[in-house]
Structure formats: structure tokens, C-alpha cells
Length: 239
Ligand SMILES: NC(=O)c1ccc[n+]([C@@H]2O[C@H](COP(=O)([O-])OP(=O)(O)OC[C@H]3O[C@@H](n4cnc5c(N)ncnc54)[C@H](OP(=O)(O)O)[C@@H]3O)[C@@H](O)[C@H]2O)c1
Image 1 (cartoon, helix red, strand yellow):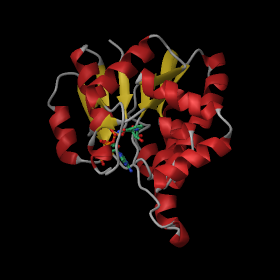
Image 2: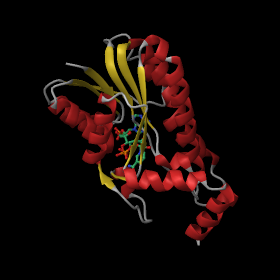
Image 3: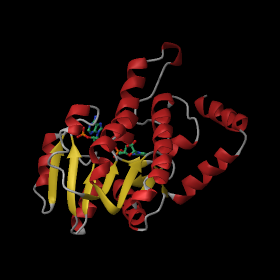
Image 4: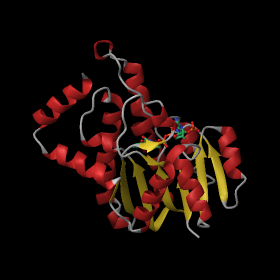
């Protein structure tokens, strides 16, 4: 039985991951803020819960003392907010998103990197949004681009400790996070499908877990083009 810690377990992809790992008989430590949703998860066999805010360093570090050794750590908690008016740039929103999606990861690494057992796997849930600059995504895209960079450095550094690192680049997934979006979301998958992609990739110790394939292929193709071509496409998307 592997011990799997998941942040953002109270909703969306993290919730689906928690249920899927639990169903496989793994020991899950489900983390989140929402007490009610965590209590429901805590009713399940083999699921322990931890309630804390990942942006509060003292709360994250307070989990260390009771933390057992871990086989898989999935850093999945995150949020998405858009900059709607670039001429009135909302630096508070910018700071909030970067803190939730990137700075918090540093707190989690300080707390739990040394708890990962040799042969374990560290998983960063970034986003396919980091492949290209999307309108209104200054905060979200920058946070996820930073996270992907961080994960790639960890892939190099953790090799000597026999710890694998998987970097997850999901396309659109139907969750409360994307329910807010009013634009078209091509190739959207369910949270359960997303969780299955991640679990399969972690099991194979894949360095990149990107899905769905068709969507990722198109994004990587667009990324290979001159940036000026992408700017022209993005401007047309905006109008
Ligand atoms: N959905 C997509 O299309 C998509 C695509 C690419 C990448 N992603 C990434 O996948 C991850 C999960 O997203 P999702 O779609 O499943 O979103 P979601 O349904 O909104 O779930 C977000 C989870 O993160 C937790 N969280 C957020 N801020 C937190 C904080 N400050 N402290 C502790 N927990 C916090 C939430 O906990 P509480 O509810 O308990 O506060 C919730 O469990 C995110 O990193 C997101 O960027 C999602």
C-alpha cells in the first residue's frame, strides 16, 4: 500500500484523484481548506485529511511533525483568475494567483520533500496554458510557467535521491475551476479521466503527463511556430 499525499483534494481533479487512489486501496492523505468536503473524504477507508491553506507557510510547516514518510506527493491545489482590464492591472489578483499556484509550492517542498521515500514520486500539476501566452492569463500563465520550470529543475536535482518527478500539463478539465469560464473549451475531459491520466503516468514514472493527446499536439505545434504567428492568432481570438 503506497502512501499518497494530495493537495487540493476537496474538489475537481484532486477529489477525483483521491477517490481513485482510495479505490485502489492506497493510503491517501487528502488536503484542502473546505472542512465539509474533507470530512466526507475522511469517512472513507484509508483516507486521512489535513485542513490548511497552502498560501500560509506556518500552516503548511505545521503539518511536518505528524507527517509519515510518503511514496507519492501530488501538488495539485491551485486557482485561476484572469486580468480583465490590462490598463487597470490588478496587482492584488496577480499576487494572489502567483502565491496560490507557485509560492505555496515552495512551502510544500520545504515541508515534505524530505518525507519522500527513495523510489517515491513528486507530482506537480501545472497547466497546458503554460505552453503559450493566452490573453487575460498574465497571472495564471505566469504562475504555471514558473511551476513547470521549477518542476524541471527538481527532475534534475531529485534524481540523485532516487525520487521521480512528474510534471502534469492538463488541457481543459470539467471542474468548478473551469465552470466559471465563458469561452469555448475544446477537448474538455472529465475530472475522472484527468485523474486516470495522472495515475497511469505516475505509475509509469513519466516525466511529463500531458493530456488529452490531440489538444496537447496542437498546442505544441503552435508553440513551435514563430511567436509572431501565435500573437496574430491570439489577437483574432480576442476580437
Ligand atoms: N480544470 C482545468 O481545466 C485545469 C487545467 C489545467 C490545470 N489545472 C490545474 O489543476 C489543479 C486543480 O484544479 P481543478 O480544476 O481541480 O480546480 P478546483 O476544482 O477549483 O479545485 C482546486 C483545489 O485546490 C484547492 N485550493 C485552492 N486554493 C487553495 C489554498 N489556498 N489552500 C489550500 N487548498 C487550495 C481547493 O481547496 P478548497 O476547495 O478546499 O479551498 C480545491 O481542492 C490546479 O492547480 C489547476 O490550475 C486545471
